[in-house]
Image 1 (cartoon, one colour):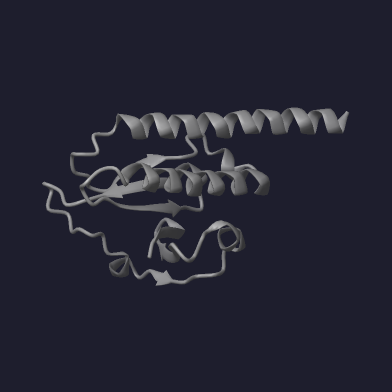
Image 2: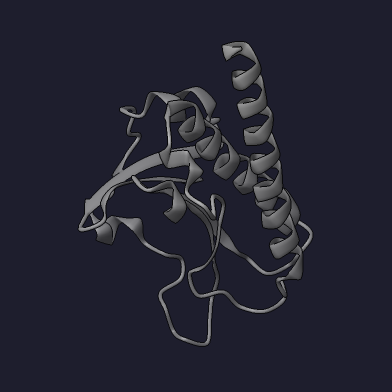
Length: 155
């Protein structure tokens, strides 16, 4: 009986992560990439299921990373420079892919993580170490009033 419950639970989870990925892509496709972005972001785990257990957390982090890869492949076809990154929060609901460019709000571009006391080449999140291609992306870590936040962005 446990195996059936586990299989059903895993099937339900896989359906959820697929739905979250489809929602992300759908929202990405509605963005006007010829416009400007001021810290615009799309969340990847709308219902915070990544908080439930370690398996879910790994899935939510993997989804966020996959969405970053998808986004970076998507924006290549646009002439405007768009800075992208993901923030991985302690609460998976807050995980998101960010878009930032020169903008009419005069927010500094490119966004400077150094002003937020970011430490780079951080290796203390073993799961990020296992999935992030560090030849293309760098992993950072900042600690603020929201807790520990990991950053994955282009080198």
